[in-house]
Length: 270
Image (cartoon, rainbow, N blue to C red):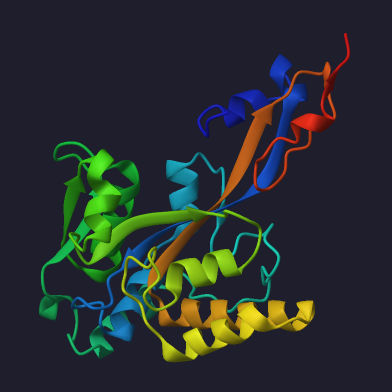
């Protein structure tokens, strides 16, 4: 079920409404800042850009309200998700103050900023356009959108051929916070498109890798997420929600957060 069809199929008057299953998925969408490129080498600038994004408006307008605002990296269904995470809130006034306190002294002092995404031609995708508009309205900055051919997008990005802002996102390969924090934000990780590096985070992730006490291990990964959120190497946008239509004669179907049908447990009743 696409996000644009969700309202229709959830309508109790529609015959398909009884066939809908939904679940929070193990996916988080976000955009990355390249912390090695000005102006995102400045923490105040990164935090300002994060706090200038209204996630709920983004979800309501672009996704027809389907999705959960992402305060952090870990999806709600992931072991290690922290409901008490101290995220960076939407606060345009505070964002403008942070930008003024940066070494760039406000929007007029910023270098040209390029937002790289996958696309065709000169048209910005609705997602990219929405973010650019928020940053322009709330921070007074001007951003150039650069489209890369979708089939070459990740090859070029991994080769360093991208602007200071890069479209990204992640779905779990397996349901563990290591697959998010280590894979995306450890120094030198292949998926670390923003070249983010924090020795304190790396040390914490090293400890979490070998910690055998489950509760302590989860606590370490929650500390890691808090560091990532406060360092603002990315704007975390949306935790996805999955929908699937299942006919009533299909029995035993379970919609798991990682969205892998357990087909061996299915049967058909006629």
